[in-house]
Amino acid sequence: MFVCLLRSSLLTTRSSDPAKTESMGASLSVWLISRADNSRPSSSSAFHLLAVPTPSRLAVILNSSPVAPGNGRSHWSSVHRSPHFLLSSCHQEVTRSPVERSSDGVRAEMGVKSGLHVWEVLWKPNHRGSHAVLGISRQSCPLQASGYNVLVGGDLQSWGWELKTSQLWHAGQNLGLYPRKRTGSHFEDAEDFRRMSSTSTKMALTPLPIPESILLVLDADAGTLGFVVDGSFLGVAFKDLPRGVELFPAVSSVRGGASIRLRYLNGATRDPPALMALSGLTIRQYLGKQGHNQMNKLPLPPRLQHYLLSNQ
Image (cartoon, rainbow, N blue to C red; front, side, top):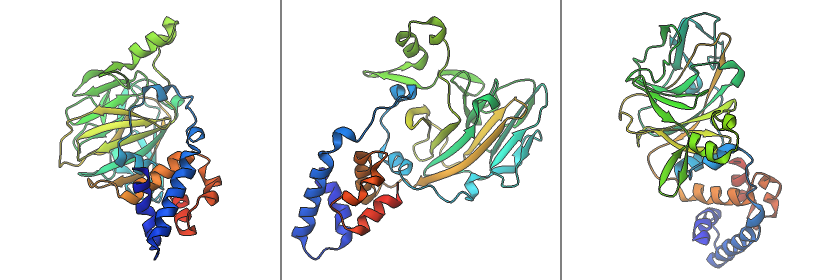
């Protein structure tokens, strides 16, 4: 199976000698397998223990070069935002004014109706406070309200993950904790997992600290929303999202001075990933994070080495 995957990449060299191509594929397979034991260092992140297998389409996106930073999908909307959110000149960052007793939201300028898409949201933990919510919304989601509330996830038009408490919200209802720990055939709340993993009750009742960078994964074709933290895909947070309607990344906050940055990374259609992309992904995973230092040792022509390096 591994040799078959590699063969699709090797054929791009258009070698006139099929036997040479077959030999090259076999040599590369042996070379990689001999180094497999050192290719994947274990993660020190607590989120690694809560990760679920990454779907192939998502894995290819996460291992591809991001689109240009100026992409329109990286912009916060200049119209669909609370007046308490100030927009930067590049439209990629919003900052909430220090207004009391107000909940404020903003959504992206561009949404999606189909495909699998990944955005990065940069939101420093000390800029969150309470009711810091990340998720998606339709066009009609409320973006300002009096008092301190969950806006994204507070109505039928939005779905949100409250970052301080790790709770999921939709239609104004708390749907439980996220992420969940897979044990056998079922999922366990992350809270339960922490309780069993720690002898300290205080630690067990404290949600895992979510770092500054969070990847929002929206599969508009499957109708699902999930998140990637510390390189770990935490699984589907929401399913049965409406199909064929425009959905937008969105945030809501009550903290004065909170700065939140958005960047669109990449996307894919509903078609399965190209075999060449899967081949490249497999090779890079075997090489590990330091693989670019070993690329010249691969038994591959320069053209394929360049392809692998260009998608690091």
